[in-house]
Image (cartoon, rainbow, N blue to C red; front, side, top):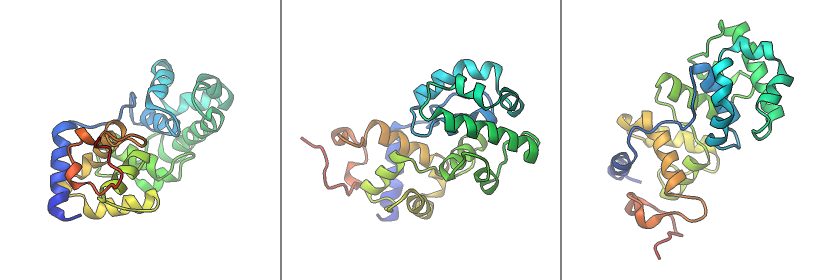
Length: 211
C-alpha cells in the first residue's frame, strides 16, 4: 500500500472512529495492567463486570498480594482461565512491589518481565496508560492489517513491526485502537460489513461482502 493510500485510510477511519480508547474500565495504571491481563481470551465487557466492584476495594499491588492467589481466584472466577490469571495477577503484584516500588514501569522490556505480561499487554498498557505511540496487535488488528494489505504478516509480531514501518507518525498513537475498533465493529471475522466500510477502496481483501 502506497503512503498516500495509508494516509487516506487513517484519515477516513479517524472521521468515524473518534477518540479511540480501550473499552476496559480501570482506576489507575495498575488496575489497567490487571484488566489487560484478565482480558486475554475474554471480552472486555466480562472483565469490566468482574472488576467494577473489585477495584473499589482492591486497586494496588499490596492489596492483591495480601489477598493471595486462592482468594483472587474466587473474585475473578467468572473470567476465562481464572486460575492461571489469578496466579499471574498475584505474581505480577509481588514483582511490582519487589522490583518497581509498586509502580507500573514505563518500559516495554520491564513490563514483559512481569508474570502474565506479553508483548500485546505491554503495548496496551504503554499506549493506554502512558500515552505512548505503541501498537498492540490483537486478533482484530491482525485481521484488518492483513485484509487491507496495510501491514501483512504471518503472526502478530510481524504485523506489529510492519505497522511501525508504515503508520504515519500523526496517527501512530491512536492507530492500534482505531484498527481494533474497525475490526471489532466493521471488518468482522465471519461477515465483514464491507458495504458500510469507509476504507473499502483501499482494501485488498478478496472475499468482500458486497451483496
